[in-house]
Amino acid sequence: MDLGLEGRVALVTGASKGLGRAIAAALAGEGARVVISSRSRERIDAAASEIGAVGRVHDSADLAAVPELVESVESELGPIDLLITNTGGPPPGPEPLGFTREQWETAYRELVLAPMALIERVVPGMRERGFGRIVSVGSSAIREPIPGLMLSNAHRAALLGALKTLSREVARDGVTVNTLLPGRIATDRIVQMSGSREAAEEAARSEVPAGRLGTVEEFAAVAAFLCSAQASYVTGTTVLVDGGLTRAV
Image: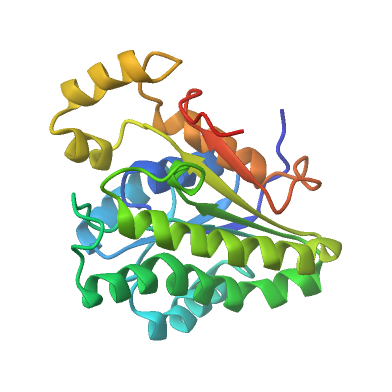
């Protein structure tokens, strides 16, 4: 299926590895011109070289740097058509009330303010041009809070509310806004939370209806479709990519 992404300009944040990198690779494979960003110059340059993208160093917590990032993309490649906001999860903890005020504020900045700063910057141009795709990488915790992930449970749900509100305002202008909810995908984070790759795979075999961890490529394929011309009537929604793990309707 031709997704109609040839020549589209995409910005994918948090894309030096894991879900973000896989999404960037999928978009590049569909002919999009892709810019990827992360905090590490070494990792982002390596990833950009491997997938045929342009690398930018950007700290998602630095809200003041957002205009410079967007301007650098647009000056080199043109207006951004596809924005994929992806940020790493905040630290876990066994005690829901055991996080400091600083940790709460940092999580809010990274999971809510940072993606919204990018969205606020690119959406006006998308509306003027009559085309735009916003895809936020969230978590299945939005549907079913995950034990030990208090900060992620709280702030990813907050962002979802903002994106749902925005989606209704921009739908008539050809701009879609959707959120992808990964379950147990084979990434560094799921390995760290499980203690080892073997432990993560064993838990998936017994707990995930599909009987295994998902791959980053499977996740990225859904993101690419949401960015496509064919997905123009899909907006304001969440899409689970979790092998059937989430029980909520």
